[in-house]
Length: 510
Image (cartoon, rainbow, N blue to C red; front, side, top):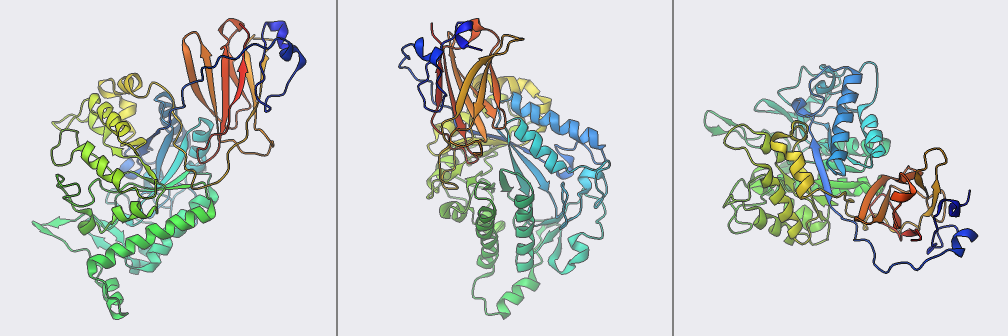
């Protein structure tokens, strides 16, 4: 059916758009003004499963209840113009997914080792539903925590039962000993199993390395790793105990970076350490020394480019004199020798507090603006999901009005994969039954080419509008009628590492 019959004329300015005689006869001069650049910003939320903090809301929910809660979370992220979910899938040597390595988490079913019934794989479900909505899903694992005090009795296939020599009791927790190479091998095996079997977009670790200090009767308890330390010394090791502990963690980070990308080059590896490297860096900063306390040399990981993105937890208000947000983010940006992503973490959940520590929504708006003002910082990760579901003080409306009014693409990671997506093949047609103007979308060059996202930019009298569309979509409703059809449309394909190709263009005659 000819588009001319509906008063539309296409100017085919790209070889990726198939020509037609009717369109060519009524071509018009294309305006010189281009659409604004597509905004690039990582906008993610941590969805914590430990202690049922975010999801599922309590252990033992039915399969359908768990699915409904996950759908509600994903739909809320889309509504807020977020573009990623960081889902905790291994809170404590357990699994919120089907694993042959570790037992089902008690936070999921109420009993460690028991699968959901009726059976489903929560991670496979979450990945599919996230991708259906154009959201990335990063699988969040804890490398060393073996049992949280809120979890129930361990199952027979838990590491504390099958390999008790790897486990240390420290305060109310069980921890895997980072000094044992078998522990490092286990964490790497878990991570690669996730990358291999699930279509995740990233592997993520937070700030729990060697544990935060436990205090008993006013005295700090020593972490009980004498066995592995003495073994190291007997073997001729020359490092100090602190340097040895840091090197244990360094080895895990470096090896994960290599192994993840060897399995799937496009899967990003992210780390979220405590927000302060050491007191005095920068000079005004005071607080916990993660280098000496958690044995996490986070600056080294960033300096060396062992991560694809770095999310220091800047959990203090802007006006805190010894943890100033602008000074900390500037200092971290200066450590980014390899030009990786800097996406700081924000304690957005404090907006939902009911005590003196409560923040106003404006605090988060201002922190996002400070992030944007810092060269080299290109996004934020919010802790945690429940605050967006509760929406205290109209937090969601404030964000959408002030900083998240437009959709955004995740910043590209071109060091992970080479190549640029081809110009897409785009056709505009009219649905005969509804009158809608529909864009048909196909990858350029080869129908076998994978498109992760489509970016559709359209111009009306009100200006340019940008929409991000999942890559598996073969069509997009551009307008409800001829009267509302944009005068200028650009379509780009985006690959799995966020690289966008050249745009195809459609112009409607006046």
